Amino acid sequence: MMKPTRPVGLVGYGVYVPRYRIAAKEIARIWTDGQGGVPVDSKSVPGPDEDTITMSIEAARSALARAELSADQLGAVWVGSESHPYSVKPSGTVVAEALGATPWVSAGDWEFACKAGSEAFTAGMAMVGSGMANYVLAIGADTAQSRPGDALEYTASAGAAALLVGPAEESLATIEATVSFVTDTPDFFRRAERPYPTHGNRFTGEPAYFRTIQSAARRLLDDLGRAPSDFTYAVFHQPNAKFPQAVAKRLGFSDAQIAPGLLSPQIGNTYSGAALSGLCAILDVAQPGDTIFMTSYGSGAGSDAYSLTVTDAILERRARAPLTEAYLKRKVFVDYAVYAKWRGKLVMG
Image (cartoon, rainbow, N blue to C red; front, side, top):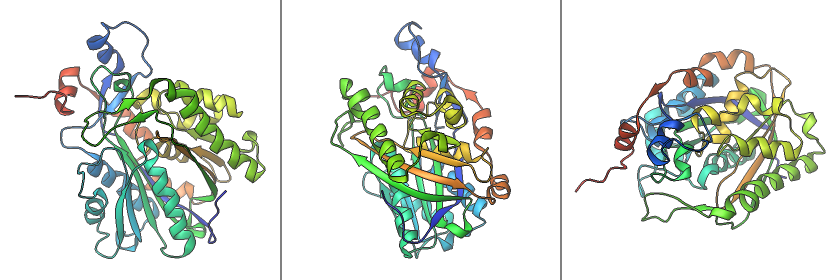
């Protein structure tokens, strides 16, 4: 278990979800003649002028607004993603520049599949907890990456979540502790020269997602001497609607505990900020004194588990920026042809 020497917490948070959606039935219409069940209702799709950087900026602005913090006070701006627009040029510098955090700031990119955002979050805890910085912005963001016709095409979505870490005394939720669990489990991967990720098939479920999340979650519960019933809410990585429900049940969490953060059926929610966006949705409804248990997951494979407690500051701060529900409600559905065009799935010439 890892605890910072200096108590830390979240002083702000923000979410961004594109307005565009593609219905799962529309994807099934193309590839399976509409036959078979679909894992989500629809998924979010970035518009033709949106990418990891633009979505990160939107989520970050909400986080800064909630904290009423100017960007030049940030000690670091870190962007976790598996779909950075550039292979060499960092996303973090562009986001920092757009926010007004440059030039005296640490900026960079993080990678660990769908838990790249929580990796940045843990590092932010350490940086603030050590006194090296007062505020660190950790972002998880992705576009919708999936091979045409692949099962992942139904759930690989687009969005961003930003967590602003700062001193505990200024926080809307204190962060008690975290623990990380990683193994070299090849459930999902993409080589640099390949446009789409590949599944490890039989490795995806039990040896990867379930073993990894359960190991991290149980270790943190044991180290803290807590039980699932001690928490008001819980959120787990959401590659689909069934996996987080199943892992919650195995660990002893109820459907009521995970319901507010379960966004997968509506927007897909397979991206580097998936668990973080679920946490933000919970913060949108949580009350002072509520406790939150969060466990991320990234293919490859690893999980980060966290314990948080909501403070009185939540009541005022969450009204300073759009709630997650506002992004979920605005929907513009596109057909598969438009989706394929926007995502570059059509190769010409």
